[in-house]
Image (tube, rainbow, N blue to C red; front, side, top):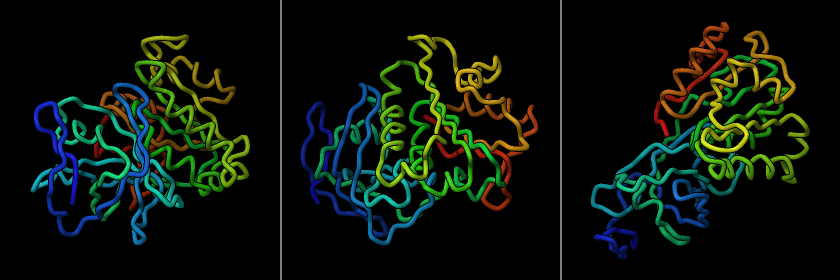
Length: 274
């Protein structure tokens, strides 16, 4: 099957066999948001099932032994296609090539989804906080487009911190499209809130979400009460430093980590960082 393989600065079509036991899917669209971020959609195998918030291993058929990396599925479980949101790493074993894909190209995907950012890992609550940095918003792109999220929670608060303002555009589009989507709008109503901050520019310069929690600005900006483990649940995905800091803030307020086999008041995805 034809695929992309890099030789120097050129990208050439090269034939490599599709490995056994994986899906080989076709890219349907690609959108570049910045020189560091892009999203793409691809066909979904008819037999593939997953829970919103899970991730899969994806790769490219550009070597005899393809490189696979963990990617959160950004599309909801009901979507007919699969969506992914990725960072671009100039010399990354996978992203160096993945960022060059075009509609019609082939992407490999292992068959088993997994992950902790799922409803089953949380005990019931009233508000769901989704804390993200960078491409850590990807699993939450799935979660906020899942009707079950709004059946289980009265409010859904999505936060994203990036370095630059343009890096927040994927999240802005995501939230706007979710609120206006013909299918989702009746579930979402006014339940979905979005707080975006860019640490290097704009009005929120220098204010990471951890700072916004500590100084209370996150809650005053949105007009909501501070975090309360009696009513609130949290999901965390992003850089390792952010994961540790948010966890510390939640634990200091009485939150307890959950898992698929033991639900709690917050969950964190440790499989990868952006």
